[in-house]
Amino acid sequence: MKVLLLKDPKEDDRGQDPYIRELGLYGLEATLIPVLSFEFLSLPSFLEKLSQPDSYGGLIFTSPRAVEAVELCLEKDNKAEVWKKSLKEKWNAKSVYVVGNATASLVNKMGLHTEGENCGNAEKLAEYICSSPEPSSWCSLLCKHEAESIIF
Image (tube, rainbow, N blue to C red):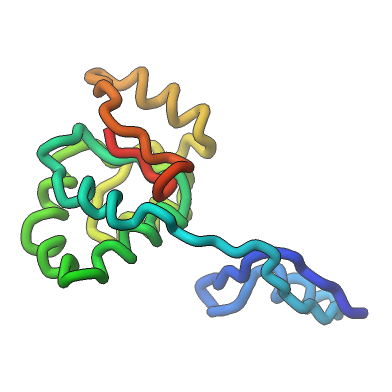
């Protein structure tokens, strides 16, 4: 039997979408069709903020898309080298929060140390952040409007 999966493809550690693999174990032939497209609209503004860690108290990554936005910013104008030499270290001196383990894994690959990944959703992460010993004041909210990240 054939099955249509209407979702973004994701690869597991075996290089295969886990849904396709699991359905295949039951004799189902799955075809994956991505139904959403995504476009980052404010990367120049986001890059400007990302390049000024001294102006902010930390980062919050709300999704893997947020990590993708940072990676796209770093690909422009040789920012990857600046990231390795100084920006990464400056951001690591601040709080870097994430929603979920998948996002944490991607942020860790960028060289940032994360916290809050076990909260599981944005509401619980907000509670976690607010209960921290020194919650920061919010200076700039980028979530949903710019790159699905928050710099505070």
